[in-house]
Picture 1 (cartoon, rainbow over the protein chains, first blue to last red):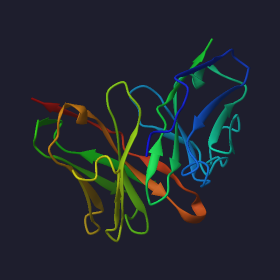
Picture 2 (cartoon, rainbow over the protein chains, first blue to last red):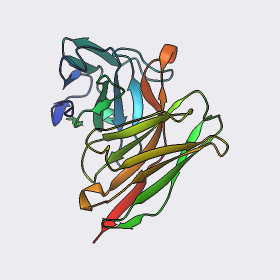
Picture 3 (cartoon, rainbow over the protein chains, first blue to last red):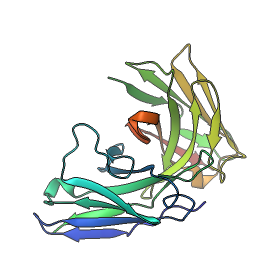
Length: 110
Length: 120
């Protein structure tokens, strides 16, 4: 299994919305709805923001939303804020009790 | 609430075995999956493997020949051993709880991470 593919960087202006893609294969994202998203501030542990494609944990802002189409999952951040500037990672179940992470996307707020 | 704390040597010599322990506090290790995930400096996350509290395991195929994850339910701890380490194994190592079933599937609680450097 290979890592999931994410764009290296995505940028947007405050108040706008951006979308981060996470592309896998028919064996992982295409076959299972266990896709999660994390953001990670420098020097900190990742924090869960979306699970099972589109579910938000308690306490996570509703500005974060997730979706999936075919072999690609997406994270959308609406109403972009300065605090959203950090790194984002996707994770997906690949079958056979194996999990994959994406390479990460750096979000820049212009 | 449940908290995780990694512990172990921050420096390991090349060709030796890296050993880390994750202590679970504020809750029981029972009935959950527990994982190790690492992050080389400036790079992305890599899933190493997980263990269920009963002892069943799953490992990243690329690391499987060198990885052992074990659990000690009496101590509320689980551990990672990575043998024959080389420079590319230098990373921050995180332990995490994997939620499953009706709670959804994701890594919902993470330790703060511990930096392990492989020296020559």
